[in-house]
Image (cartoon, rainbow, N blue to C red; front, side):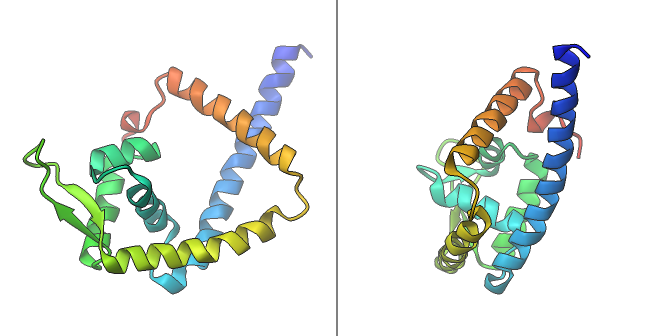
Length: 158
């Protein structure tokens, strides 16, 4: 078997494992943040809002998350309905309102973050930090190659 074939086979195994890990992570995350009225998807979007340098419209949040804009819009609308985010006027665009956390949203997000660190520490237990750093580096390389190939969120129909 050639090196290219071995690499392609290893990448296939990695991608299949990523699918399983992604699904398990979402289920695990949903259970972690459910006491705060959140889901993994809501928490992820709230994190993008919380960590942004300034309020952003939905399209920018979706881009930063590498997610589909329509899906982010749907979740942001649900968060707004539940009083966890609000919309502000965007001085640069009449229709693309800026999304901000409300006080209730900030409290829910901060509670989820407080729950995250001990849970993440438990998940990471006995995994050498060098191995985690290598995994992060490899995944970053794959993400960059996929982006270079034109595989971005707006290309997806769903």
